[in-house]
Amino acid sequence: MAEHFGHEVMVASSVESAIQRFSEAPFDVVLTDLNLGRQNGFDLLRHVLDKAPEVPVVVITGYASIDSAMEAIRAGAYDYLPKPPTLEVMGTVLSRAVEKKRQTEAREPQHEAGITQGFENIAGRSARMLEVYKTVARVALGRSSVMIQGESGTGKELVARALHRLSPRAERRFVPVNVSAIPEGLLESELFGHVKGAFTGATTTRRGLFQEAHRGTLFLDEIGDLSPALQSKLLRVIQEQRVKPVGSDDEIEVEVRVVAATHHDLEELVRTGLFREDLYYRLNVVSIYLPPLRERPEDIPLLTNHFLRKFGREAGQPAARFSPDALKLLLDYSWPGNVRELGNVVERATLLSAHGLITTEALPSQLLGKQAPAPVVPGALVTLEEMVDRYVRQVLEHTSGNRTRTAQILGISRRTLHRMAARRRQNGTDRRDS
Picture 1 (cartoon, rainbow, N blue to C red):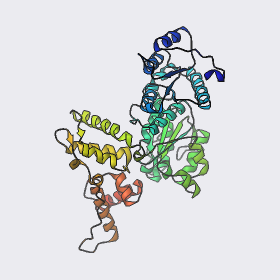
Picture 2 (picture 1 turned 90 degrees about the vertical axis):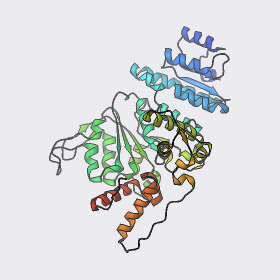
Picture 3 (picture 1 turned 120 degrees about the vertical axis):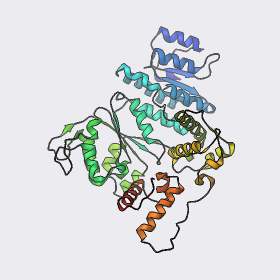
Picture 4 (picture 1 turned 180 degrees about the horizontal axis):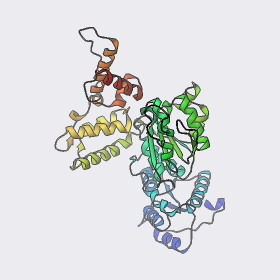
């Protein structure tokens, strides 16, 4: 089939003969099945990665072996083809693989080893996550801006870090910033820097995050919360690759790959005029969508075991395990806070459980089907502001301090919740450490 596209093809009937042929002549692409008799496609993949990591390996697999295909991608395979591959799909994948080899040959050799290690902090075996891994591997070599979209807690920063680790910028800095967590009045200075005396409190000149990320990657989380004024300035910096620090008349050249993320529907924000269309298209050159956990429940056991091992290591103890009833509750829950919420639940359950077995008693109320508490009306009349403060604290207690879940129950953004907490501290009304 590959000969149809003008490629010269050499066929091997076993891993041993393939390795022998690979040692005798150079190849642009290796196309292999996973089931090859005594040895399998993983043996050939490991050999190619060891001897010639610049050669892309494309795995052929049946749909029943999607887990194996995903493992191959994470182990360093470039792509996979479902059986039987169509002529069109075969041509597209081979064309991309050949182009990938040409690109990697022009790169510094020290970056090649990272391709097999880029996803070590991301857990997931579902077909949806496999597509994410493939997209990340394909776009990591480029310079284009990337937009990562998905609900809060789906792991957008982990994907951004994987993009950086797999890129030619891996030895430069990865600089993350949550734009919704920085007061608007300080965000411009944080991004672009400022000179001494630019504003009250600017006692020294400070480099901005764009300068810190020079020749590296700048990750702008929650980009949908950026104000219109800063959207305009960000667009100019991305277009011209120059920043002007606050209070300065001079511009500084920067070379930065921007990866942005949001849980908002940016297209809707564009339609309503809340987000600049030209900035949206600048940031959304490549789009990666992270599915919510409820759309990939088959990943929940894997993620749960990942967190159990993690918290076990941190405590210096063997990993705990969930009882069948507790695990069923994890699988049945909708996880509005996604992977972050799952991690919080597993950590809490690990702390509350004895003898290494986590039962349903260690799970929070929302997993047991209990609703958020209704607001308690005090006996004495209070102001509306105090009533709101009391209810916010009540919901925080219900969610064990999970601010993402609290904001979802209240129907507000995390940024608004942060502002309310800051106001309570300022007024001396927040007596608990949340």
